Amino acid sequence: MPKLSVIVITKNEAANIDAALTSVRWADELIVVDAESTDDTVARARQFTDRVFVRAWPGYAAQKNHAASLASHDWILSLDADERVTPELATSIQQALKEAPSARGYRVRRATWVFDRWLRSTDWYPDWQLRLYDRRAGRWTEDRRVHESVALDGPVARLDGELQHYGYRGIAAHADTINRYTTHAAQDLHARGARASATDLVLQAPAAFLRNYLLRGGIRDGLVGLVISGMNAYYVHLKYVKLWEQARRTAQEGDLPPRG
Image 1 (cartoon, rainbow, N blue to C red):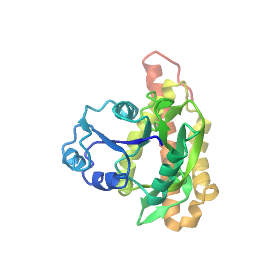
Image 2: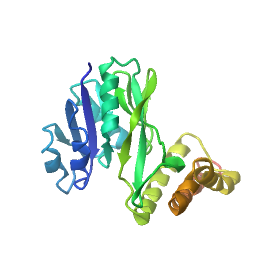
Image 3: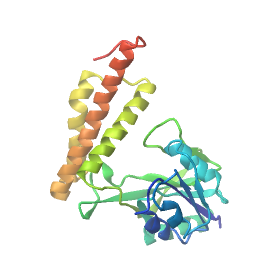
Image 4: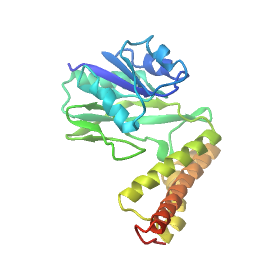
């Protein structure tokens, strides 16, 4: 049976790290790579493992790849500090590894705790995440500033159980996150040659709202589903507006003509 290393990257996660590491105490190895926290994240993490490292922040994917490189075992479970592995998911992971996995990676469902409930609708669920993988067959892609993912050479399967996500801290914090992430997402799109048209600016956000609220069941969650569907549509709108702005800025610098 392959052994498992859990990797967690952190930055000022003192409020979350205890619960995150407790949920994976059953693993063969816990590795924490901290990005120079100013709270007691490191001290708390060292109560669970002596495999705690401090390293300047190079970006999400690069930090996760570095953490995976420090692992003693090839099978990696990547966990964010604001996430918890449920007992059902833990059992599913252990069973998958026990049976000599034919897949090189596994996706897990992620449910987010928002407004005192688990949200199991909109684009936020099931939110399949490839988190369990063989590092010999995959690594985190470093060509994106946000929404990093594992590029895997080999078959991917799915696991039972859920990854619980406690990353939602209210509308104000969510809006700050949207502003930061859409800037990076627009930069990534622009670097890949994408440009925002007038059609994108008019239709992408309404389409995102209808997808979240109707097609993906936000309507079943009442006002909570309505609010999250609206915020997700706002994310899409802001991303395309920033992409449009990026093209104009680049054109003014004499590199490319603006579109739209």
